[in-house]
Amino acid sequence: MSGLRNPRPLVLCGPSGSGKSTLVKKMMADFPDKFGFSISHTTRQPRPGEVHGQHYHFTSREEMEQAISDGRFIESASFCGNMYGTSKAAVEQVIQEGKVCVLDIDVQGVKQVKKTDLNPFYVFIKPPSLEELKNRLTARKTESEESLNHRLKVASEEMEYGTSDNFDFIVVNDNLDHAYAQLKTFVEEKVLKETN
Image (cartoon, rainbow, N blue to C red; front, side, top):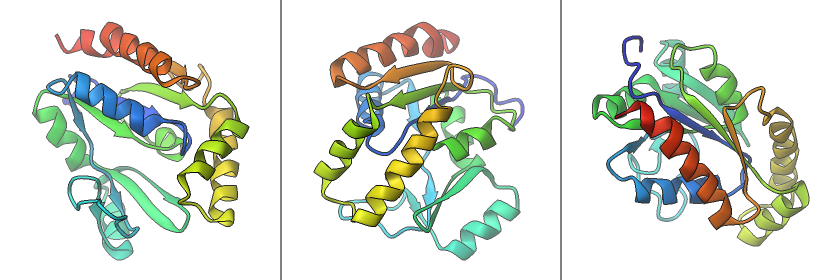
């Protein structure tokens, strides 16, 4: 990975339900030629409408564990019994296209990336409160009571880590347009400035 310094990747982190995916989609739509998405690997089954190689690289636990032990991953984590991770190849592919590589990862992943020479910008997307997060996750109607409680417990831990000590920028997503305006300003003033 060394030598691939420019452009610096952008790490976006935030609890499930924080609106991170929506903000990333808006950013990618506004700057289609500036950003490339690092497509994560996962051992979970595809959800309806998800396409292999577009939403995730769907793989088996055995294949993923082998690739991690071979040192082919920058970060990996387990969540709700499934493995997720970012391969070095996925990041290198985006950087070689001259784009800022976007990594959408959790706190476990951020801690691992901080131990590498990737040197990205770190942005944390924070919900206004755990109560609001619970409302958003409940409204999705995709969570069982058990998985909802697990996500809220993880979210609470992630929000404790989501401070200016650990991230370059924090966005509180209390209003999507306002949150996106903050993210866009940071991206234009910091992240993209380095690519020009």
